[in-house]
Image 1: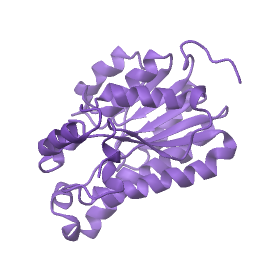
Image 2: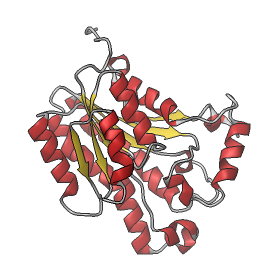
Image 3: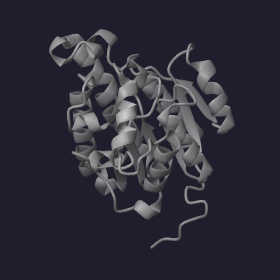
Image 4: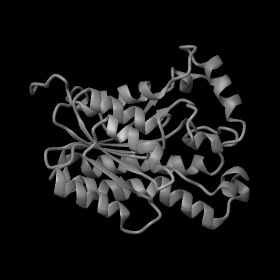
Length: 259
């Protein structure tokens, strides 16, 4: 077993996609990576989001801070061009990006339009595949890719609607990418946090009821927070987890085991 530095991600380069504000799961992950030695690159959606994300990037001393809208051609490629020019390599890439048009998300799956379904699948799932395609060549010494899922990928969660099938496709993509990239030393994980009050979750109907039920039913008896997810991501990015890949890792205080 190779020696593991202390802190265990010392010198690693990590790209974090999907921070919207200080409540974002992606921010919890970026903070955890930084705390254990990684240097982080951070993106923000647009100029409206920038004031909420820029102070976080400064706090984490991110040398790369760029806009990224997955629906705009060329923006993801520009991020990776900057990483190549600045770092020359990449060790970790975390994708925490999801979107569905409000009318398609809140109207139930039967009411979801073809266009809305396509947008949700492209932004929330296929953009992870595109990220992996760009990241893998920079992971010259191996690396780790993360996608952000949810329990609604496997079981019906009322009001999760179109995002259920989309997250199911995302988890399947994680498995297939783990198979394709394993020989290059690249590991791939889906993280499945329990309900957390983020900006994205605010688009789900009756989300507060979901939070209350989760706290009541979870074996640990508590909700998880963004730091809980971050600590699991940091562990999976280290050599301590070097033989783990392709699965969905639940960070939900045990909620997923309950009938």
